Image (cartoon, rainbow, N blue to C red; front, side, top):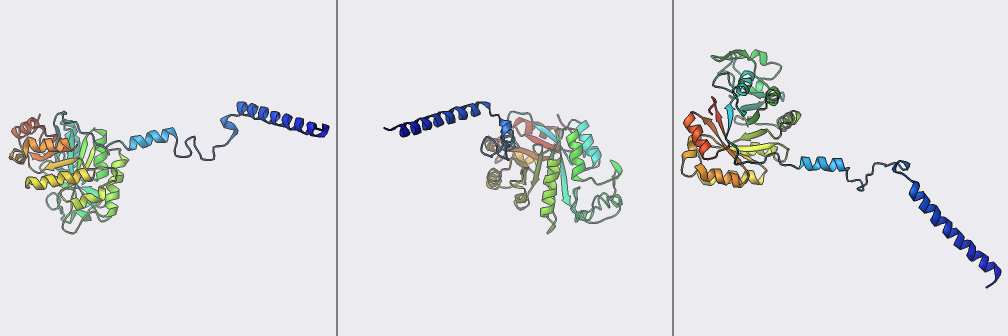
Length: 309
């Protein structure tokens, strides 16, 4: 091997050695701040650890049934036994009377406001009669409500009711009301969902009605849903339970507490609901005996005009 070749080989070895030494020194001294992130994260851009934790929280169930929890008491249209129904005073009164929650009725107005009222027209409580969907936040001063329990009370909006409920730690059952062909629009659905989210009441508010077609727009919207059922054959009730399970619902309401004494209902129906992660409650409970019976068979909640404990 001549002298020229030896020199070339020696130069190559020295170059490789220098490169490796420099690379190692660079790796020891470089910091995260030496390179911009350019929008990418350590997990290849699929979100930060904090974002992953938030996603896990978002995936949490809105409702976790506790069948051992004591029966809850919901004020039917607020504390309607003492205050004008579906009014702000009835909501505040329910909180003061130690109700666990309230049941209200909601309509979509023609302008998109969500009004809290039971009937499809105003004649039962207002001097001026019109369809409730023609009443909104702007013109409601023309339709003040009055009865023996209150005078000159405005028809509230869902936003106002949820604000009071949130402040008073009340759960809310929202009954979607429709009349013939007058039903909720997609705008109304979004307004209801957004209002619930505004007050962070997703876990403490249930949207319910007897019509599955009116509930379908709320499926997978991040709110809780439920069905109210009349005195049907047990097979029909079972189909409601299957629908709730399939569509992420969690609440079954029986329209009369007396129905729960029927052979096809009672403890067997309560057990079936609980096995499927569904809470079960009843509409208007009329007296203390009915309430005590519901408590005995482990019903989750009862709606009442007056508080029973």
